[in-house]
Image (cartoon, rainbow, N blue to C red; front, side, top):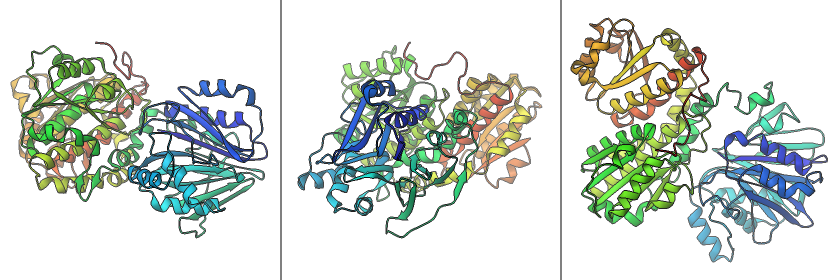
Length: 607
């Protein structure tokens, strides 16, 4: 998730911008850069890798005073992590520099129009179109040019812009990506969050969607895209600088769970058009998808659980048989693959060793590989036929939370795309329509559920064992819930298909072995209710996660969590934050650091 810093005023030094960027390192990034007006041009410096590389390049100038400057840490989405793709980006004349967080959905169309108008591009990014749009509209009034440019943009953004003709001014704007600003008598500041600002100010303004902000020495003006002036309330921040790196949250895991609404917006951005899945990156393999005789999904851990949801979705809505295997087993199977096989490989990091060996085997036998990953330029992305990115931003906590939510959203889109190509199931239209509303559902959910999950965790965190059960789409959800609990709380948790209880696992159950039942109001609810009664007959306590308003379940379980009613296929998505929060709070109550579970690594690059 990219980071922005901007400063304007009498005491601004280059080292101040760099220090601000360092406060945003926790967000993760692959390149960094700064820009500032100087001698009728914008001076731009950017490097690949850590901020230390940028500091080394700027070492002779760190103490230099500037009138205004913008800085950026980039997490690659459009274009690999290269110097050319790093921010800031400039216009043709080298007078305008732009930094940007978010995704411009219509950048391809805008780029074509701008090239036809004579503009020259130097990067693969979506961001560069903003610099050229501002140039196109600039007639001496920078805020006006930016407002006109914003009208052309579709997608999410937080931007900051400097112009060599206005050396003591920064103009910023926001839609869907965070931006906070503030000022003193002689300076003004902006950033992606409050962390870089706390050294200078404690009273800040959180910019809202559709706001355009002019920052000048000791001055801050907020207006709307139509030019009308607005006021935003001041917020006093009393966090320490260290706690602010986590946005005021005690752990990155909790912060990343609360980022899930924004993550969903980024995952879906530009991928739904006219009520259908829109994946231009898949066009080159469309004919192979249509003629495929079988689909194979390969993944590990949490990615495997997301893949289980996709398997069921494709079988329900794309009229094709689907196999799924954990990559560590898949790579050693004597599988029969040819050019009629499409393999979907899922890896958050794109560097999972077993998954990579699996897709190399597929490629050697003539199969087609569709990669789903979060990291632009990763090995998986490079070695696959096509890649669909999660756009979740970096995840600092080892346990996957927001990336799992992003994986599910992207896989639903992929599933809908396959359905459109193969049989065009009308039921998918309703699913896509609901999926578009999921960011809002998550915002509403996360604003209300945390305290109730804390209380539930207090009831159960001292147990040594837990069994998660589910059927249909509820089984992958049970597996993911059990994985989260065991990996950060160290409570032994296992997951079973609810119908398998009587074939062995039920022998474990007693009053010291509670059950977590995944039981939404779907086609298999009655079956799961019967399984719950089987567990109650063994004196096991039962927690149920169910559809809101389900009084029937409330009468037969000890505790319940209610989730919004959605289509059957979407319950794994809408249940995710509840299960993640339960595991998180259980871990904290047991005195564990949920960000750094023992014996685990974020990216598994060994067999």
